[in-house]
Image (cartoon, rainbow, N blue to C red):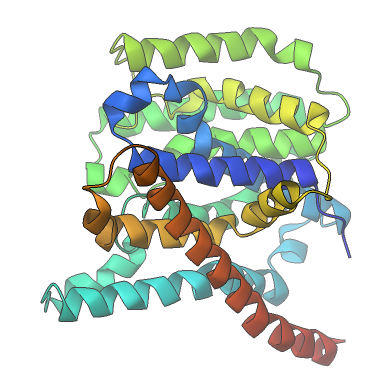
Length: 332
């Protein structure tokens, strides 16, 4: 069994907690606490880590061709890890839509599946699915000349994003397209391929440019050449995101002894399930606690999604692991 990277799991835990803060706090409050520099980096962090983890897996298995990556096992693993948990939450949402909100439009209810369901952050589900398809292609393209291709893909990603803005792609469609996160995946793959060669000092200048870009977009209303709604979550900002991950992975010392350390690692491993439960919570439960204030308000919107997400994760593991073990034995 491959040993898990505790620093990565901790980063994922911090990222999912940040996602919850994004949806629980007002934009005014988030601006005041300088959230663009850490809390609003949550989804870009997830995207870089997706590219990194996938590329690490391909390298470990010596998968150098698409035909060796896109196997039935790869596809079924993605179905088990992404589609099954999401489908459970989506079915619950549809039932509530139909029964409680009296939404009888069957077509809209069914098409919501392809839009990530309901709730804040639902766009992330279709983007994750696109990422699982695109990452193998990016990996094969970058494998032999990682740095050169990373630079080229920077400009390709920027061009695609600029063109989507120029062509005025509908916001509801752009929302669920991976366009704005494409280069984040590229950086994750580059990190996996060139990990031993990438140094913090070599990223200071590009990360500083990203920092200036983030500051200009959030605090000086700089529009630039890409769409505005998603603020700085575009190609120019991701070297800053990457620097955060590099520093954390190089210097973050994580143990497995204390209850807090164990909890943070578990939250990181369950981050996708917690993402799904926080979507559900903020969609139809949060309003019942909106009269709370202060620490109690924060405690409530943090605790409910995290606890239910952890329970969901444990149930998922308990249900799928025995079935997966039997399937693996049959395939041998």
